[in-house]
Image (cartoon, rainbow, N blue to C red; front, top):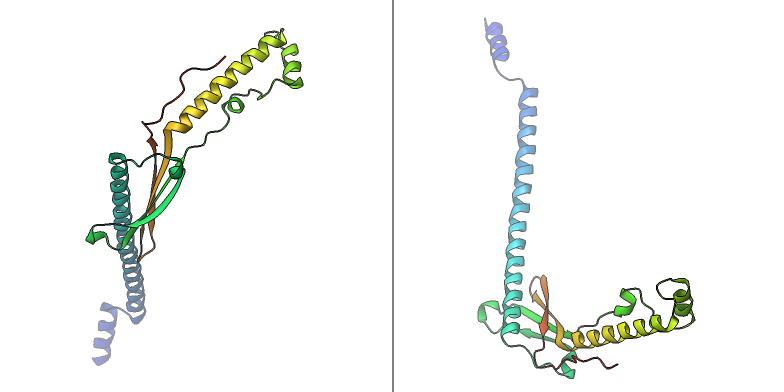
Length: 193
C-alpha cells in the first residue's frame, strides 16, 4: 500500500528535473527583465540630460538673437566659456563661438577659370559659342567680378555662431549652430566695370 501511494504521488506531481527546468527558465526571464529595466532607467536619465542641454542651448541662442554682439574685427574669432547665471543651472556651462563665415571661390564652384590664360583661350577656340577669345575673356571677367563682390558682401553680413552647453559633473555636452546677420554692415551694390 505504501508503494502504491508513493507511486501515485510521483505520477501526479512534478519530477525534480521538471522543477529545475522551470526554475532555470524563470530565472533567465527575470534576469533579462531586470537588465532591460536597468537600460531603460539609464536611457531615460540620458534622454532627460540631453533634453536639458538642448533647452539650455536654445535659451542661449535666443538670447544671442535678442542681443546680438557688436560685429567688429575682434569678434571675428570670439570664443568664450561662461557659467549660467541662474542657480538651478549652476552645474552647467556654455561656450559661445562666433566667427566670420568663409565661402569658397564661386568661380571654381561653377566651373570657371580664375584667370583667362592659355588654357581658357584654347577652350574658347574649341567651343563654337566662344569663337572670339576676347568675348569669352570678357564674360569670365565680368562673372568673376560679380562672384567676388557677392562673396565679399556675404562674408560681411553673415556670421556663424555656435553654442555648446556642457554639464560639468557628467561631461555630457550639446551644441547648436546658427547664422547671425550683421545689419550694421554696408554692402557693395555696384560692380565696377
